[in-house]
Image 1: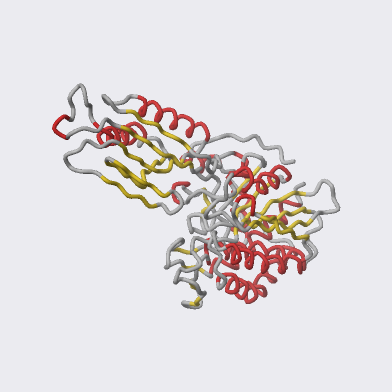
Image 2 (image 1 turned 120 degrees about the vertical axis):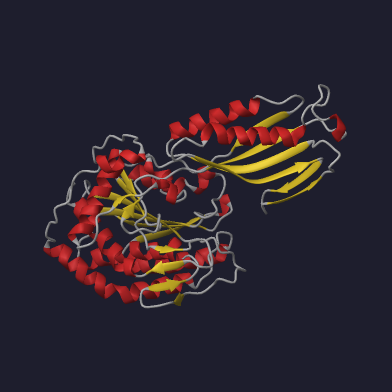
Length: 439
């Protein structure tokens, strides 16, 4: 195992904690060959991206996700990996691809490489096909988030296999089928990630991160959903504010939300967003469809409200503190009102650690040795939660944002920057090769 002590650190200190590795070092013969093979691999990589993008794999399109998984399975079998389909029916999703290469060396480096098969684009979405926009840009659903990243993983492994460089490393590749809409319970849908991380020394994620090839995600914020239920005493509006009737549900909800903002908005890297609010005499909310309706009259004091939102924190400590502050606010009710705040299980934070910064420094060194820019820690506020967060606490080092860069993810303007394809395949292959020689 890599002997790394995890040290949670504020992001603004990250640059000072990255080891000062700047001098360009010559590539060895194997690394030079990796670079040559990468250039030869690009046509096949582009073809494989196009094939995957042209199959709709919205998270709830079970058959579509399975089809993309079968493509990846065939590619990984051809490289020599053992490949399993992990059925997802118990958590109401398609499932995951798990591919394994075991070294004969019991002390070999163990790397977990994480991607995902699904996208945010539903089966009936009108954004369905891959299209080249220019020699350096292409568009299509999930091209950057993250079918391009999956191809970077597979291409890097294919090159290392061709050069007989996989012998001193053990690899698990996990391509999940529910990253964009997680199956429940999370204890089942994320079990393969946790199991892989417990096995591994290092976890690498191939999301597009903040879409900047000069940054890497050494930290990611977690995601927690919350629901606020508020009740008031219904009565004619002329009686509002008096001692017998009180303030009603909507005023109490406004007090709570404003107090959340006032007490928490200065917390660095913490965000909380009320995404939908429904209030009145009677309300109805469909959690599955994210829709709701309400009945109320201007001359009736509101009896009930419901608010759903999210909370994103950079560390478990910050998350716990924010939850406690929010609960304290909710308890301090206006007259004749009551409120309950319920937090859901979500994505844990991927805390900034010295191990992650060390890994980023090595990745940056590879980038510079290849003649590219240094890679700095990304601002975690510029990217959402990701599957690697379920792995981070179990490994010595983790790093995300190593995939295909682009723009417009989760929209019909999703575009890939194809100039980053060869760069990140080469960086991935050389990073893993170098790490395997450190064991």
